Image 1 (spheres, one colour):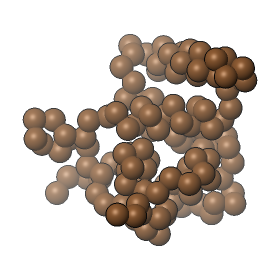
Image 2: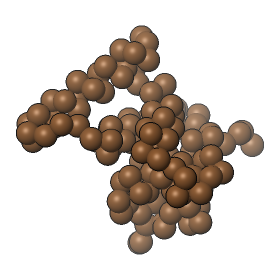
Image 3: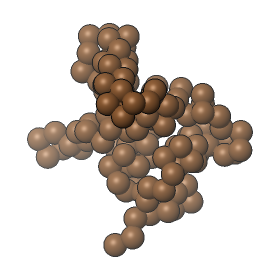
Image 4: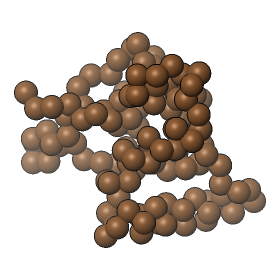
Amino acid sequence: MSELHPGRHFFLYAKLHYQHTDLLEDARKLVAAYSGSSVEFVSDSDVLDVVCMIALPYLKSPTPQEAFQGVLRRLISRTQSESRPPTVADVVWEMFAVLQNVRVYEGGKEVIFLGNSDPNILPLPED
């Protein structure tokens, strides 16, 4: 069996394999599980660092800087239309949107190994 992707639970969350409640609180729990930390020690900055580290490589841009600039442009455009500045939650939402659209299968073959959701991290979706 191939090695599971270290950020697999972020992908699974983005692809709706976990219940979504509060975006930042859910992301804190994912970061805590990823880092082996306790949720109470996970800051907004930690969430941004980890979620961006996992998602940015999947943006189709020549450099990480250009990728992040594209994300910022989308954020600013979306939040300006709502007459508010972007928040941490907006950036996290954008990163999960990136992960949601990453193809884990190509030609019927799994190329990113995600494994199963873990109900010890977040609740699983109700059927």
